[in-house]
Image 1 (tube, rainbow, N blue to C red):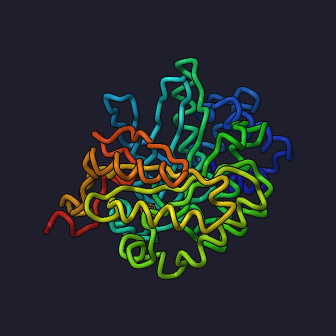
Image 2 (image 1 turned 60 degrees about the vertical axis):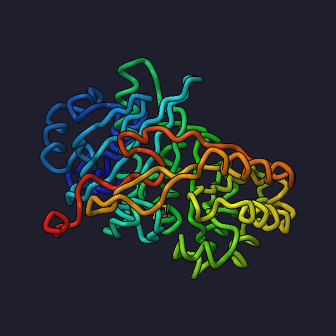
Length: 354
Ligand code: SF4
């Protein structure tokens, strides 16, 4: 629900200020399903509101469930843009929602299905939080709740910083979803000015950065953003982040077979990280293996994952250099819900004609 618009509508209707808080509590804390599900406000007001503004900012179009339990929801915004979100269940009982922050993405990483879609617009804070609300209501019906939120879906959250920031505050607000900051993670492709803002927030929110390559030449090929913020700008910003916050930093490294997964790449990655004292103190390399994706026209991407032996060698080299690493299990690969696969079911208008 768009709380800014709600405030305006209530004001136009001459309602007392406390009504906004009543509705906010019902929507975000009590997880009401619609205006009729808010008994604390009079029925005529409920009807008036229903005629003036939508209860949800998003409309759920489809849900696809993977055998591993991950649900990928396709939503449409009010202006009919497709966005996707994923609910990831874990064996330990945690329930993680991966949210999108943009319809499409401005960054255009070559291996990413979202990147191939192009960019439509950034999402509002309420569109971001609504993705969590849909899953939270569904889980509530099963006696469960959302335990973690990761900003790792479609889009670059650090290019819509203020919207991301407001969404985080709403997720964290005890009068709303009340999610602890440590249970929220943001992933960026490396937008240096935003990393510097984030460093100053005095939050407990986790930061993950997509490295994906140990040299500028290779990283620029995979992630065009590296031409704007090369490793010589990114790494000092990350080192300052760790120095100031003293928090663990996730360094995402997507292994692409034959591209960035050689033993030399592993040595170079170790050398890069060891150059920066704070990054090497609290950095943790998160190794991901590539999930096959189709581009916006339905063609399979040219990339593939590493072989088992290549992966093991890469890991051994990091270990030998004393670089802590972990391997992230990717959920939902068979329904296009895994990392780099969120592309929206809708294709560009001319796609079907190719
Ligand atoms: S990997 Fe992330 S930043 Fe890169 S194109 Fe995909 S959504 Fe955008």
